[in-house]
Length: 335
Image (tube, rainbow, N blue to C red; front, side, top):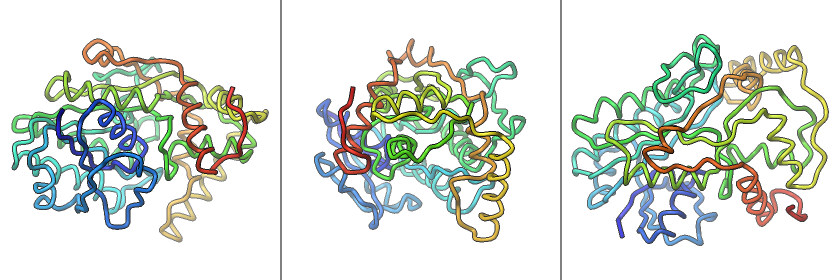
């Protein structure tokens, strides 16, 4: 049994990682802000500790005695430009985690990045860990991938002093998505709020398999290496149709015309400039919905970590059951 520490345990990935670690017999200590709602994790014996992720001193206290630190905390955003708030979490907090782990001699840190720091390939084939960053050319270098890349580079540069590995998950699907984050699409489809589909592609991963992949990265990953933890490649239309089948609703039949989406995206950009607040529809989120470049391969993780890529339907069913139990989507039978 190991003593593990997680930052960002209230998020989709961190929550499922905590559940998997506990199921495997490990103890979990998790950092939280005073305002963090942890009620969705009340069934798990997690030791919660209030800590400022920007404070090296506070993190040193939390990390002391840990066998591994899983850094999952992140600020996910579709903003086009980096803001201080996004950078504070994705870059500055990562720097503090590194410094604290080095100071107390943490045996291993597993840093959660994103697959969006990798690729795309020039010819549109699936990217792997060796594919260089090139999202500027694709017009999709938004605040989230840019800041996550900066945090990832900090970890790589610290590996002469820190035993760290990096995991790069793709689009996550599964239970315990309390906010929700990527599960919002499931909730919207289930409540019949998605009238159109878009032609973009993504790589959809079972969050439970990704959590197991992270544990394997802790135990078997090579120092300084990064591992793509992905899943099934689908168009958004295919994914939405699978979700609709599970929840028992008709999928949208019409494709959203790009000119309409483009106008909505530009309107969202203007809203963000005028109000300073983020909106769910802007030119970056429109780009995500229409691109066919989010394609990844997980051969390295499968080979070195024993990572398993399976169909996405079980993850959708698990997510739907979890959302239904909390009244976030209508009740019904899951096929």
